Length: 453
Image (tube, rainbow, N blue to C red; front, side):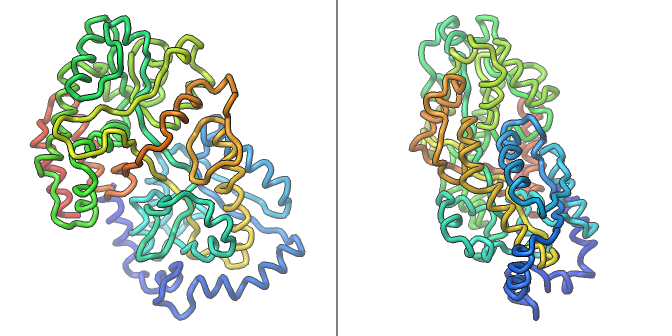
């Protein structure tokens, strides 16, 4: 992905100066977008007052029927009913295709008014004048701005300015079938990595797949396992040094240890043999069929469990954090948490559209959306005023809500590290899982890409 990014960045070089003149919150233009927005405020207010027609073009991954999309569609329906003068020209694509799509549109200078932007892509988009600073939009509604949870904008801040409005927190954890554990002679969820491997061996011996993993799209092993496992070994300071390019290296012993811990797990027979040809949807189905004792997955899958899993699977499913690695420097109770994607606004948007943009963003990333998300058991960027407590249909959601209370959040690698580093790490993890590369070799390959980045 880094190569693709460089390709479109080079295409844009000739127009960089004119583009930067439109970059949100940039101090380098004679006519700042923030100033343009302010100057158009009276015109925008007049438009809102007169209910003039306006069309907003949108790009999102809110595929109908999926967890987050269910909440989004509920809020969007109400928004469209209350704002008949705002017409939405919406394109919806799969999340797996979003990064490529956004970068392709950026290269062609064809971004829609509002689009989804991944945290790791923000810096490039800001530097090339593709995204509007949203501080003014947030500051115009202090109650809304201050309702977001602490630190939720961290993936979208460049030089102290904000370029995205998050809508969802995603966490990763282990969903496990306590009955299958018990049948294999494992009474409690393991607390250490060594205990985890021993439990895996017992479960495998019982004739059940210990952990089902669908890593066909490559991101699963990195995002739902390594981001947590890495922190178990390295702790927070090492990661911050990596992110800040302040001396840490991917060949440092603590990170190599995390790769080796995953390799040891695979060597113990933890995963399904088709780990790199199964996708995450198939992974979920294998677990719901009772064919695997564990599924390491994200909080986005909770609604799928509660809506589609057989009752016996729901009743026996529990939630746990990945165990601690002996000698590790991380917090054994921490789980990954962050907002990988946010709503971004095209830097070249017609200022007359900004009042409609603000209305839309407050609707799809506000407390009503948080309440809808809470109903399906998904963590949110804003504390909901309603929840699913007492709803007997939200079995796994209720267990997850209890599990995640008070836990420290640690970053997800692919939310913050560059696409080039992620390409190497994710492809390398596919090889590591099937024994085609050693932990040391993979660490070296990642470090080489990191040094070029």
